[in-house]
Image 1 (cartoon, rainbow, N blue to C red):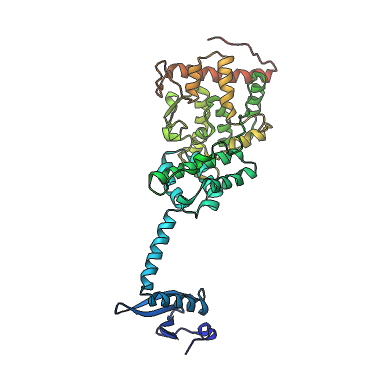
Image 2: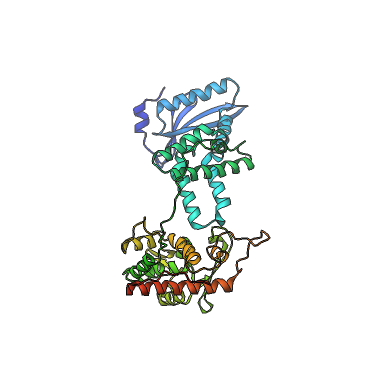
Length: 409
């Protein structure tokens, strides 16, 4: 006798598991814990087998009968429905393993560990926010240029042209990884050259006028934030390293007695370790906060939200906003352009020393890259000279008389 939907709904658990038959091998298995499972008992090759057809109420009586009939049709054709189910399960697993998201996550785990924290975070955001929602479930070998372009156009539509270009670059890296690991035949991003709107050239705002710089330094000196934030703000113009390198500074990287900061390669954009000579002003500033942070964090500038991480990428930027400087007037990254311009045009230091201190790619006359300690003595002299020049600008701004004459070397 066929089951009725109400019977299935009202089936109560008993001390032992029991079955409610619907006929032709289909039954509902009711377990003591209350679970209700659809099962199909059949014979194939002389052996009795059982095929799971789902869990009630997710699978209704009607759906169970449909799945049961499908299994019986296969059996009538001499096909074992249980074997088909196993093949489908394996195929589904392989398909999931070769989706864009699966390959991208594998690529991220393989390639990204040696990249900088900021680069990993930025790439991860692009994958999670812009690529996975539209391409994640697609078999990576099936993604064609028009589909990838449509995904990138969505990013462009919100005015994020630069991110669209970064997403194209990231997707291309994932596709090329899929090619070399045998999951795809080619990289469709290669066909999109020239298809995106051009990037807007982005220049970090920077003050290069000595009088304006002196007034900025005076304003910075009057900042009333936390000691950690103020110190990070105050050392930024002296060091003129990339903001991420400054905020991620660790105590283990510093030799304050000898005035030296050695940044490991995995934190550097060029993936080469970098030596920064420390002027006496920076050493003094760091020593002032040493009792506050060294005992509780590996970072010189730990976050107020937890000592296990450093201050955020916006900390110094917000400090500049607080003292009245907009993003169009000055940025943390702008201190690099400030130093690059004034060290050359006003103080007259050697350009190769300046470029090397900025951690730009600098080569010797034979085309070989300089090592991390190249011109260290000269750069140490330059860094102290730069710091003294900044202090002089600040003093003159306070006195209302900034001298802008060029100093020869």
